Image (tube, rainbow, N blue to C red; front, side, top):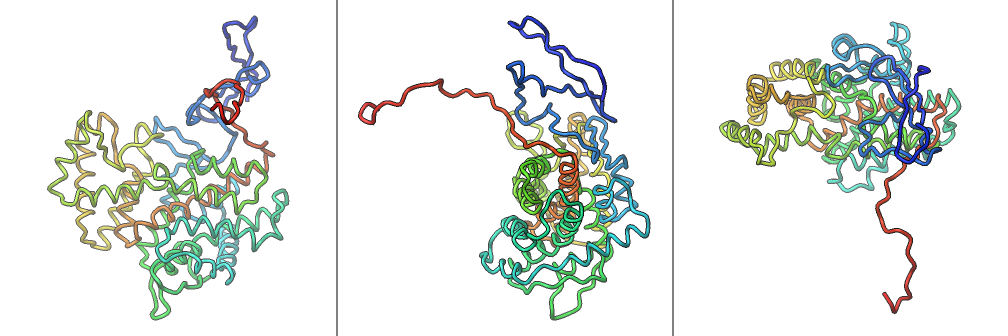
Length: 428
């Protein structure tokens, strides 16, 4: 924070309006417009592209430089040296755990990974072809009906237990949704497995035979969770914060985040990548598709290239590309869509048009390919995203509660009719 002031001069006002200017640890200074309403004005910023909605110590993004920091740590270092649960601990507690703290946290998460049998029965109420995200929205919110005895959001112990419950149960809930969609029995979690291996076991194991988790696949999935763990004030995180500002319990707040993430402009981007690859159909069609992408008069655009926030490169994509290469080499998967993806990647990294426009392959491009290669069905892609993002959502919810955030109440620019009188029914 600072004592500097910005002065806003408005035609018709006798004196300039003084607004406080705050200086963050990193990033541009922020003009506090909270006092404008007292002068009869408020700001208009569709999409909140120039508005800070909160103060946070969790994640920092510099889109121009391609920087993503969690509590100050670069995402590249976290993905290379840490597990997802270590990153989750960092987001929630502010520091990376030491060996003892990590073991205690991992044990706590494992102990909460089962769900009540009554909740498992909920899935029987969904059609077999219900979208897994629809199921996830419902059952995450329903958790509050089973754990209503620990929902005092201002009690530190309640906060911690609920945080652990949500983080630990998301893989179980996601896996049950998948099993329901294919008509297989849901498996109970195994506490001796690590977080990501346990999820893969519940996804692919059956009561009929032992399922051995491939360590390459487990590491790839763990990195996907890490790279999606948090991304500052995106749409779903802002939704969690807005819902939480009302005093709603964390289960319903996370369910609101799941719902927001489901949108194709947010969490569905990696699904769109696979749809695009399937539409291209054959590697021989790649050149014509690229030509369409370059044609300014053609509305067609390639999915999985460029990013709204990152104007230089997506630091998560660098890690994901390496992981993608490792997975494809280890599994030796033969898939026409993957061949198309590799050819598009080559073009994007070498073609002057893509380089000048900074249309680099982003994290959604590579994560979609990885999930496809390891056999995750398309309708589970966004569920995987939600699973990874849960740590970030919970970190932001906890931070918001600790700060005593006031209820969110955006204003609007009203452009409807002025006051008018209702005419009698016969005169309308």
